[in-house]
Amino acid sequence: MYRTNTCGELRMADAGKTVTLSGWVQRVRKLGGMTFIDLRDRYGITQIVTNNEIDGALNEAANHLGREYVAQVTGTVQERTAKNPNMPTGDIEIIADSIKVLNPSEVPPFTIEDDTDGGDELRMKYRYLDIRRAAVRKNLELRHRMTMEVRRYLDGLGFLEIETPMLVGSTPEGARDFVVPSRMNQGQFYALPQSPQTLKQLLMVAGIDRYFQIVKCFRDEDLRADRQPEFTQIDCEMSFIHQDDIINTFEGMAKHLFKEIRGIELTEPFQRMTWADAMKYYGSDKPDLRFGMEFVELMDTMKGHGFGVFDNAAYIGGINAKGAAHYTRKQLDQLTEFVKRSQIGAKGLVYARVGEDGTVKSSVDKFYDQDALQALRKKMNAEPGDLILIMSGDDAMKTRKQLCELRLEMGRQLGLRDKNKFACLWVVDFPMFEWSDEEQRLMAMHHPFTNPKAEDIPMLDSDPAAVRADAYDMVINGVEVGGGSIRIHDSKLQAKMFEILGFTPEKAQEQFGFLMNAFKYGAPPHGGLAYGLDRWVSLFAGLDSIRDCIAFPKNNSGRDVMLDAPAALDQKQLDELALAIVKPEKKEA
Ligand code: ASP
Image 1: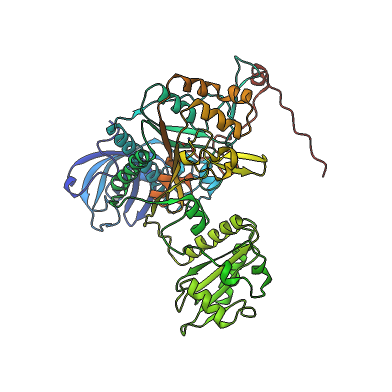
Image 2: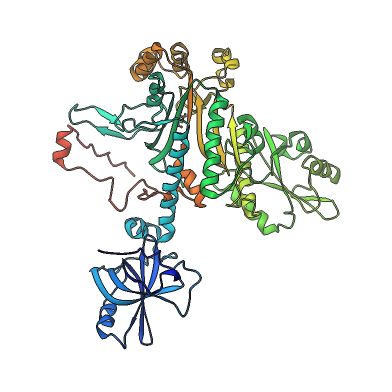
């Protein structure tokens, strides 16, 4: 028997028992005549003690232990003289009778402790050592508990978990596909699913009226902190439902998770905001509502005073950073630098401080007299001590997005984005289409299977850009944790949608014929949504990146540095697949 107990289990009530523990040696310390060993496993750390003066052989064994050796210890549980209230096992220790090395370890490349000395890349390369650290392991435990609760909740509502294939066909609509060459069908390729979207819709045609799947999805996109090339969705679909049914069912799931995982009871219905309002007041389709600081449009207030930047602007908007009038010139210069960074790309920033006496001083005093500034103050609802920040630009949408970045930064600087506070909302009524400069055509904002709002269908031909969709996102603290839509279930409307998206009937048939054909055989009204599991877990764990809640993530260049993937194939494999590598020609400098 390797162990009678785990390293996280023993307490004062076990004093006097003879136990055997197995685990990894976290640390060995010599103190006077004693040697202390911290033995660690998944469940915790237990202190082992040997008394050198009494038992020379044991002392010898303890002396040979190095960091991360796998060891087995048998001994007696005893009350500690110096208790450690910071450890669950801190009241006891084991007086060792025998110590056996089960497997030695090389010196690990970084210390396996909460505050490790290993940098990011090193920890990724030795991820199996990183996962030994409690901080990382806890995220994986949280992830496990969340998936268990998701299954419990959905099973309770009669949802069936059904697996869909990982080797599917390529659908160029959406992100780029990861493709897999076929050996048996040389020259042909599978694609890894970007989501099981069409397959779950086919399951609705098949009469499975409540489906879910916790499923890997693959998108070949540029990576960010909240994106990985492979990620996990909680993918769901329902039949015979309206938008409200979906929203209620999955708001219920969110509340269930908050309660079971975070112990937070959310009793109020989540706020709902139209996409148009989200853009107008927050410049984002995923506003962080932990704080206000809504945009106020200032076109009428600020134009016509001879300040050319504003006079020529297509949009002028301000935010009121409450209580921030104390910002120094240096801090304001830093904010200006912040909005000018290439990722944001704004030209500049105008500020106005409201003094304790109510007078307003601004960076453009030259153009605005006190009356004009008081009008600004009134419009911004600003009180003494407040700081008004104004941005403008010749593209309204772009400027709103820039102002959104400033709002989020101010929220951060003023401590309004508390990780233990949660602001949940649904953003609804997304536009059906968005214009793509790259493709020079309309693209589906959610996906081509999304139902246009019934009252907007007449505009499909005359003004498609104004058509809204039955599409919704759930947003928590500025993170899009999920999204979905009511689907088109009429093959004619689906064909029309492909036409608007620039598909010829032949191309639509070639790529999505399977779906349109299925719709001819009695497709029920249906809709659904997908939650991003990685984002949920990182939100609940208070992490800044989804990487830390994934056991084996990729780095920012999409590489697995531990497995050293992707990598070249050998010639034999290439031949079997009938593939040849054409090296991109070196560009002339
Ligand atoms: N398949 C969609 C996505 O991956 C979600 C949905 O509409 O259910 O974004």
